[in-house]
Length: 395
Picture 1 (cartoon, rainbow, N blue to C red):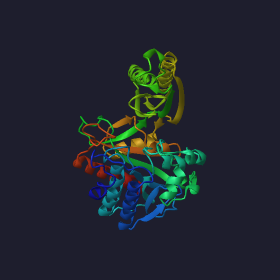
Picture 2 (cartoon, rainbow, N blue to C red):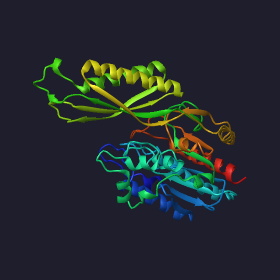
Picture 3 (cartoon, helix red, strand yellow):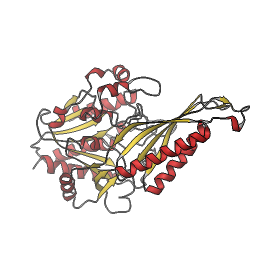
Picture 4 (cartoon, rainbow, N blue to C red):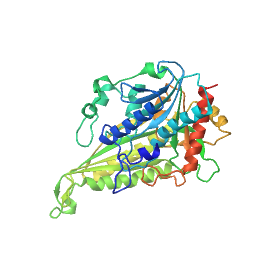
C-alpha cells in the first residue's frame, strides 16, 4: 500500500508532496482509497462532503468504531502526515482478519477531505462541514490563490457542491473515532515507546494581516517619502516571534503575498498569514493581541494601514478521558502527550468520543519532505491500532 501511494502528487524537484484538495493528485489518492476498500470486500461510501468511507459491517449500524485520517498535504509536505493513518487503518483491519477477530460493532476507515487547507486556506474542511463547524455559505465562499471557488473545484472534480453540509445522522452512528498519526514533534524520540496516546490539542487559529501602503518607484522614492508595507510586515514577523517566545507559545508567519510584487517597486499591499498556538486559550489570545498591537503601532510609524481578519479558530481539545485512558491501558501504559497540531479527530471531538495514537518520529520534523518514521515503529503503530480496534469493536 505504501509503495503504491508514495509517487502520487510527489514533486520531483523538492521530494515533497502537493496533494491539494480537488486536484488531479487528490483524485488519484481517492481512487487508491476506493481500490483498497474494494480489494478487501469493504462497503465503499462517499458522503455528502466528499469524505470517503470503507465499511466492515453495516454502514447504517449504530455504535460504529471508525479509524482513518487524510491523504492531502501541505505544499511540499512529507509522506507520513495523514497517509500513515489511512494506510495503517487498512493494515490494522487486515491484522484483525488474520487474528480471526469478529467485530460486534461496525468498523470503518475514513479519508477526510481537505484536512490541511493548503488550497483554500481553511483546515479540516471535510470534517468541519460534517460536524457543522463550517456553514455552507462560508464553504461556498472559499477561494484558492487563482480565484477558483470551492464549489467550482468540486464540480470540476465531479462532485456536487450543493450537497455539502452538516451530517449529524452519520456522526450519531459513531461510537468512537481513533486517528493514528505520525508524531509531529520529538516527545517519543528519546523514549523506548514507538507509540503514544494523545491527551489534548492546543487551541490554534489563523489570522490574515493586510498591510496597505503605497506603490512607488524603488529607485526614485526617498526613504522618508515611502509608505512601505513590507517594513511593517517584517517588523510584525519579528514581533510575533518575540511575543510567542515570552509566552511559551507558538506564532508563525508562513505564507505571504505581495502586490504588485516587482523587484523595483515598493509594494502597495503585503498580505501575511499568522498561525498561532498555545497551551491554553487565554495565552493564545494574549499573544495574538500583542502581535496585532505591534502591527498597528508600527503601521502608524510607516504610514501603513493594517487590517486583521481571523480566518479560523479551534479551541482547546481535550480528548475523551475515558477513551484516552482505555487506549493507554490497552497498549500497556503507553505515554500520554499533548500536541500543538490540529487534526480531524479534534474537530469531531465535540460530538464523537475521539482519541489519537502517535507513531514515533525520530527527528520531530513534519510538514517537510524530511518527515519520517522507522518501518519498525510504523509496524508497531499498526499493531497498536489493531489492538485498539479489537478491544473496542470485538469484545
